[in-house]
Structure formats: C-alpha cells, structure tokens
Amino acid sequence: METAEKSDSLTSRRSFLLAGAAGAATLTAGRLLSEAPAATASGGLTPGDASILRFLAALETLETDAWQQYNELGGVQDSEVPGGSGSPAYTAALSVLDSDMAQYIHDNTDDEFTHFTFLNAYLRAHNVAPVDMEQFRTLPSSKATGAQQIGRLTNLMQLTVDTSWWTRYRSDSQNPDFGDTLPQAVPDLATGQHPGIPRSDADLAPADHLQAIANTAGFHFAFIEQGGTSLYPSLAQRVTHPEVLRILLSIGPTETMHFQTWQDKAGNAPPLTDPVTGLTFPDLNADGELLQTNLIMPEPTIFLDRKFPVCSIIRPTETDGAAMGALKALTANGLFRGQSNAFFAFMTNLARAADAARHGG
Image (cartoon, rainbow, N blue to C red; front, top):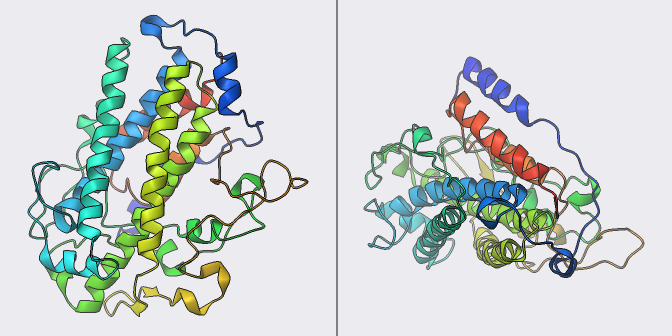
C-alpha cells in the first residue's frame, strides 16, 4: 500500500487529467473517406494525423509493457514474446478462468508488440519522430520467480480496476456517451489497490489469495482491451488521410476481438473472498440480467439521440477529449503508480495533441 503522502502525490499528478469536453457530432467512416483532402504535412501526414498516431504508439507501448509482465508469469513462454520463465502456480490459477488462458495471454501480448512496432515504423516512413519511452522504464518488476528483473513502464501490483465495462455492455438503456455512469460488477476491485500478478513468491499461497490475484488479472485484461475498443473509433473520426483512417480501422477491431475474449473469461472467475486482503468476487449470476455472465454480446442501447431505436454498438465513441479520457482512465486504474512527473507531462502532451487534431485540419 502507498503512504498517504504518496497518495497525495499521485492525486496531484492526476490533476492535469481532470477535465474533458464532450458533445461533438459523430462522423462516419464513409464521410471521412469521401471528404478527406490530400495530406499536406512533411512526409505526407497532417500534423493532426501524426499526433494521433504518436499517441496511439505510446499507448500501445504501455499496453505491451503490461501484457509482457502478464505473459512472463502466466503466458506461454517462447521466442515470439521475449522474457520471463513462467510461474506454474499463477498459470494454474489463471487456467481456472479458462484452460487456454496461457495461450490467449501470449497471443494478446504478441499482438500488442506488433501494434506499437508498426505504428512507429509508419511514423518513421513519413519522417515523423517515433515514440520512444525507454527513459520512463523505471518501475520495479515483480519479485516472483519467473519474472524478468528489468525496469517497467507500468505497475500491475497496485491496480484499481474499473469493472463498469461489464454492466456498460449489458445495459439496454445507458451509454457513457450520454453521461451515464454504470455500476461496478466487482465493487471491491474499483477501490483500494490490488495485485494482478504475484508480487513475490509469498503471493502464491494461500490458494484463494492467489486465485483472487488471477481473478483480478482476468477483469483487468478486459478493462485494458475495452479501452482500445472505444479509443480507435473515437480517434478515427479525427483523422484526415484515408490511409491513416485505414490503419485505425484495421487495428481497432483487433482490440475488440481481445475484449470479447477477455470479458468471456472474466465471467468464469470463481466467487471468493481473499483471506489475506478481504477482496471479494461476487457470484455474478446471482444478481440479475445486468451481471449475467453469458450475456457477452453487446446489448442494444441508446446511440446518437434518444429518439432513435436502440442499436448494438461499441460504447463510448464520443470523440471530444477521447485521448485525454483514455489517459485519465489508465491513470485512475493505477497502471502508472510510481511514474515520474516527466512521464505524466510527456503523456499529457501527446494526449492533448491527439485531441487537438481535426478531420481536414
């Protein structure tokens, strides 16, 4: 746990993320393609397109760092995904959610490596500086057997997991784009600080404590990927060049495929109370349709205007403040606990530049 002083410091670091506008009209991909003027900036990218791609490259780099840590302890160990040697006990606890969890973690990690590598290569090809975050690789690794002892960009050992994504996709009358706040599926995860990976070998017992860590990971997997599911279509509405639009429309749906997989697996997390921390995972099937675990298809809900019929959609996809909103959500998640002020300034500048981009601007 952090001291009160550290918590105050974190709060002050978050202060730059407090506000975000909402309310711009949604543009369709077809309109973007038909109206897009030729890119005019150096290397063929508009400044706005470059800013959006750089912000996404940064987020994909951070996401890769988190997934690599999960894979080192709970995924398949091979040459495709670097580092780590696995934790058999943690891998077994994850397999309670699905017997193929190790393979899925590995493949998700591999995908994220390709995302930031491609985006940076595309930026270089258009004479735009790629995103290099190595200077911020200062956070500690897990001390559990199987984890590499290297500097990290993200913190998986003090997570505060927003599980409202679960109810958001099961509600037929609410949508965050309308300002709605959905209830938490696992209220305990949304408060406090919880490890998603074993912090040391001491976390490998007792069994229910380790299972609570694996359950936390399962819900965190889906939290991460639902963010990308919304972010790509939100920022796609702001790009100018058809090829940049193609990139966002091609990478974005893979995030949705990841999210669909992980929300299904999270539903298999066994109900339990962690005997060490008191963290409780409820029986989601005991509390009505809004939490029912097999309702993994997005329930039709309100979209654009309440006068229209409900529609099955990704939510949210509001574009105003989308980049800053994503950064704010990840910060509140605890993923950057312990990072420097320079890191937060760097990410804030990237997010602001992405949000300032305008189609055709």
